Amino acid sequence: MFGIEARGVARSFGTVHALRGLDLTVPYGQVTALVGPNGAGKTTLLLILATLLGPDEGLVRIAGHDVRTHPRQARDALGWMPDTFGVYDQLTVDEYLAFFADAYGLPKDERPRRIRALLSLVHLDDHLGRPVHALSRGQKQRLGVARALVHRPRVLLLDEPASGLDPRSRVELRDLLRALAADGVAVLVSSHILSELEEIADRVVLVDHGRTVGEHAMADLAGAAAGVRWRIRSLDPERLARALPAALEAALDPPVPSTPGGPGGPEPVRDLPGGAEVGPLTETEAAALLAALVTRGVPVTGLAPAGSALESAYLAMTENRR
Picture 1 (spheres, rainbow, N blue to C red):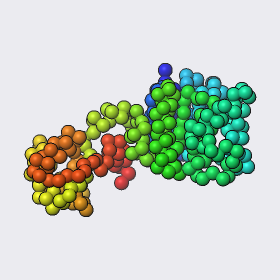
Picture 2 (picture 1 turned 90 degrees about the horizontal axis):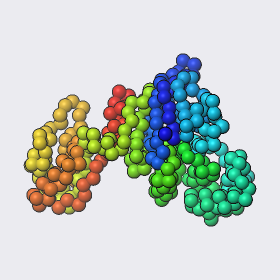
Picture 3 (picture 1 turned 120 degrees about the horizontal axis):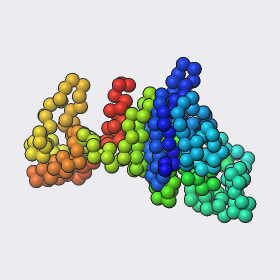
Picture 4 (picture 1 turned 180 degrees about the horizontal axis):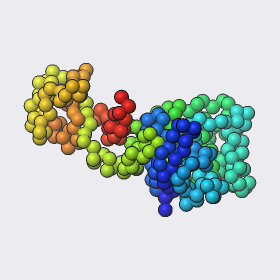
């Protein structure tokens, strides 16, 4: 059984069709990324999944509960963190969480222990007793994550959870979501930060114009990718530039052409300060190119993708929007 199952979901606002028969599944024990351009219908979908908006058509189940016929049971199983959420500034952080613990019916003798555990989980335990208005934007984001987890939900919805977080907090959020998935929670994350989603997610659902246009395991997406561009750094950029044409010819079959493949297309080789950018290449081709450069005596100090498989899939999906 899926934590989230949506089939043929449609929703219109007057003449605007936000969702047009969208399908989505979110398995337990995995993090699923929801990716799409602005206006694709992501927020409308999340509001429907959170039972805050009703679908015009289609089936939506949260933890096996139909949101139309059993909304209370669906909400009990659901943790929801929207992109922007209200906080009660005059409450302290523990009073804020206690309010939601009370709303979800947690036993009174369990609340203090649960609140302390949540504040420790999101690294706000040193803010116990402090007013919410004294928190930074990033700290309020972390408090929002704690609020979504207060009742131990089996399904977690997060809309742009990393917004406002510093780099360390983003790493901690990534580790937290991976740990929740390992404990069997079904996690759905919507974000525009594709590089972070690629590190967090097991699966990705691509949506555009209110429809699902792709649903992939991240491993399969990476394996199916035609390749991305790679950035090479060298202690001797001039030697790198001289060696690249022959190294590409030796490494690739067929070799990358020395001139752009067509009008408006990317240059197969582009000079960068301290190195070059080449591609698109698969991981196998990039490894062969590195070996060919080292064989030719080029002092390579770095070779890394300039993009990712998820980024390539997103760009291909949105190509018609250019």
